[in-house]
Amino acid sequence: MIQCASDNVVDVSGAMTLPYASGLLAEGNSSLQWDKTLFNLAAVTDVDSSGLAVVFGWLRQAQRLGKSIGIANPPRELLSLAEVYGVSEFFPLA
Image (cartoon, rainbow, N blue to C red; front, side, top):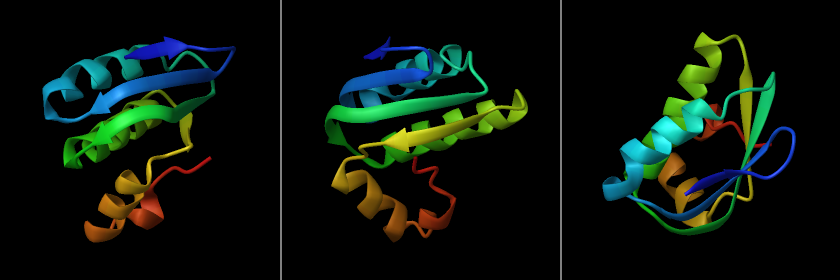
């Protein structure tokens, strides 16, 4: 689930797994209202590789709109997946 917490902070909670990926991608893309949007992942409970795809989907959409994103409090599993897939250097950590 995605919820706007403040001016440019979007809280993401629950699972970032395949069954929820398309909804998270769409909700996150709709949240790109500011020049820089910060996605807070502190309340994410479960992650698989589709969670990584969601983050990069948000990043692509932000770039299309001439905006940027940052990821705060990413789960350790998400960072590990980024390392395994060799995309850590592109991961938009805040």
